[in-house]
Length: 180
View 1: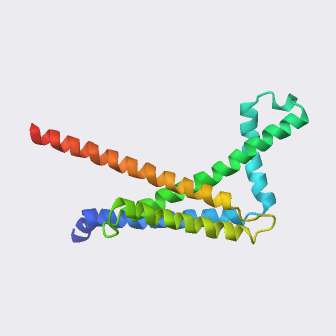
View 2: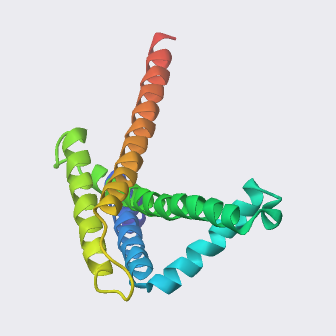
View 3: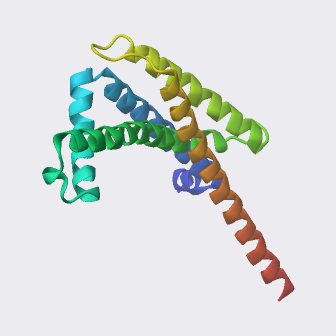
């Protein structure tokens, strides 16, 4: 019974959340590493499949367009797909890492936690791009580090917005309960 109470106490819930968020952070970092380890051909093949679906959705008559127009449309959409992929994968990492760091009250105010989290995100994005420099046909891109960092930051800001909204709603309901 004592063990059960420990895990369902407030500290136990926070500890459990930390373990889960740290595990998810590490798992997602390995996933990002795997994406970066793909050769240029493998990476293009993956994003080209997604691009092809989006292009045919945007332009149902795609197959009847001139070859030049098909190529132009495909390249535009492909660029957006690849950069959105960067933004998205780092937004997911931002949710996991930011969530983990927000469970610590010793770190200080939320602004410090956001800065620590974002610093970690930028550092990981830089190491990810350096890693790509060693992969066949890939090269590090400063633009990708910026996009990754923005994705990470957007996730952190979204999380802060959710937490702040939740706290405001909880405070309102507690104030309402006290006035009755």
